[in-house]
Image (cartoon, rainbow, N blue to C red):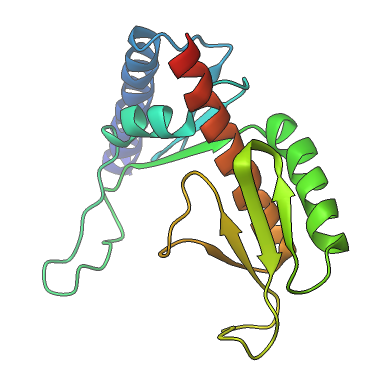
Length: 178
C-alpha cells in the first residue's frame, strides 16, 4: 500500500510541478494569471483563457509542449497510463454570450440562406439533399475554417465553434494592432 501512496504522491507532485512550469512559460509570453489560469486535475492540466483579446492558438501552442501522450506502436491507440493531457479553452463567461447571439441568428435563419456574422464569419444551414451528410449540417466560413473543418452538426455546435473562432481571430487582430 505504501508504494501506491508514494506513486500517487510522485504523480501529483509531477503534475503540480508541470503546472508551475506552464504558468511560468505563459508569464514569459506576457500572459498574466488574470488572463490565463492553469489548474491540475489528475494527470491533466486545464488551461482557461479568462480575458478577451487572448489568442487560443497562442496559448495552445505554449501549453501543448507540456502534453505527453503515450501510444501503442502498432495501432497508434492511446495507452491507458502515463499520459499528461492539456485542455485549453475559453472561460464560459467569455464564450456563452457570443455563442448565444450566434445561436439566435443561426436558429432564426432559413435553410439555405447564408447569414453574415461578426468578424467576417458566415454560416448557412445546409439544405437536405445537396451533399448534406446529416440533417442539420451547418457550413461555416471565416478565419480558421477551410474545407477540412467547415462543417458542424447542428446550430448549437456551429455556434460554439464560431464563437471560439471569433474570439481567437479577434485576439490575433488585436495582436497585429499592438
